[in-house]
Image (cartoon, rainbow, N blue to C red):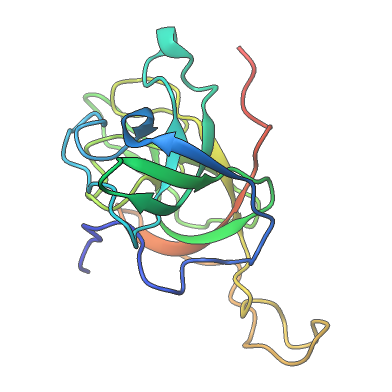
Length: 198
């Protein structure tokens, strides 16, 4: 399987058309991207790319994991400023790693049966491919708490055929994943304002 080495792109990245609460954020305040990650090898922000990101400090002393989170909608390369949607309830398509724990000196553990509503975190670990910023792990490889980004959710064509509005494809939940690291495209529902307290 080819791992994603660039951030989500194209025209099919939105899982919903709204809500939108757009804020302008300097690229230097967004992570993980470029050198702003544990590995320092993440893809970089560019117009047309739509990574799920955290805003603000990357260390516990700087407020991690209570970061504001969102998705980059557009960016201005000349000004190094991004338009970020921070709205609660906005859904996006994004690659998510199935890693659950990074175990120093022991095997990592992986999610093999993800479920709707399962938490997904902004993860700056070097175990993730360059274009992947989300995982199912509450901690990164350095043992720091990851900010909650949202939860796994249904894509528009993943509801059962009897759903209001006409026929869709057959339901594809629950899903099954390998008991090893895989980075799978999921629809993720943004859960703003539900970040861990102290």
